[in-house]
Image (cartoon, rainbow over all chains, first blue to last red; front, side, top):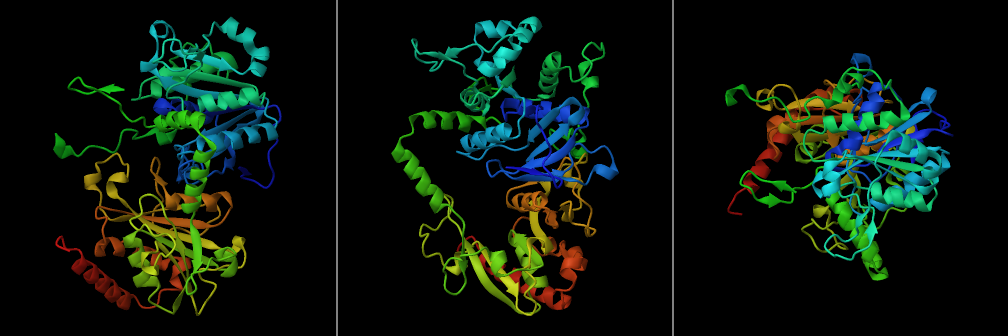
Length: 262
Length: 268
């Protein structure tokens, strides 16, 4: 359930909700971190749930002493009212059998808060690509029918590739075709639920392998930026300099090494 | 999938935990009403139940409603519990008011209905002379203190963890906790998860003042030096009034250590 930081519940009518799926390489979550950090979004509340493994730490977007001691939990909501953007960040993995209840609670909150649309940032296993996908761009999009009406033309003008259908059961030759997102976590479940609840949702994903996924996250935010124009798109500078990496991205691969090792 | 150095292809676990979700999706599609019923029964079996000490009957109201308190102290792990028992609970008379009973697939005991107090994983005590400790009138007036330990290799730092002066104390506090901590705060990018995180998250969301004291140590079993690393918190506002006799506490602690040592024998 959504619990506001302050006394009153902020009005999110007409806002665009950006959220990650906990997926391969954690690319969606890294991308949301970049967005919150670059736009300096303010925390407006918590999405308090028993569906995610509990986790706490100090402010991951701290820029100095004065803001480094604010406690953060596993699911928090940030907003930038001037751009009518709201972001939900998920920081831990799902507890077994809790993904469906989470999707239900999340979408009921989305409907209740009158958000205009939801954009899910996600990823899928790159090793599951077919031959055609191997030769094309690694980015894909998916739209729910109610979203298609509004943005299909925009997608065409951007020359984006829609996520292809593949055999539902890969091992069987005459299996039906459907959209599969291996490694995408709750992406497919959220998409299917949104279709049936007529929620305007777009999924933006990248085919990735697990490893250092920071470049993948930068790629995904640039992809999103082509559409939403969150930051100036035609700046010739290197993408990594346009997006601000949060201070919590330090030591992603562990502590320092003992000098005696060498 | 990943290829090892030797060329074999293995199914590597995904750090985002998505393999389980795909299995769940498949299971969801094939699930029958019987499966759902089995799952419901299992969930009921795994529920945490709070029971009254003497009668072992369930507590009908929440523990904090029955025993309102201004200070709620929770110790998680053997070293934290040893510290609390020796330094805080040695003074005054502490009465056991209840215990938490839980079961999951990892429990060694199979009998879930007759769990003896000795097997209880969590026991609640309140101070008889001052029932406001571990008890509060309203949620707003409660202050929560959590003590636990973690292995020093969990601590992320730009130096090597081998050079750290273990054991050492770090703290995390909620927004509404206004008192200073008795040690430095846990720096980014370090995080805490599981039960201590669950308690702190609850307190942060519902605006309850709470502080977690985390001892990073290289000895996870009961250890005198690790327990004594918690000593700085005895000067905190919440515990100061509860601590009476420190030399006596140290003696109690030493006794606890020897009792445990005798039991840890590879032949028993």
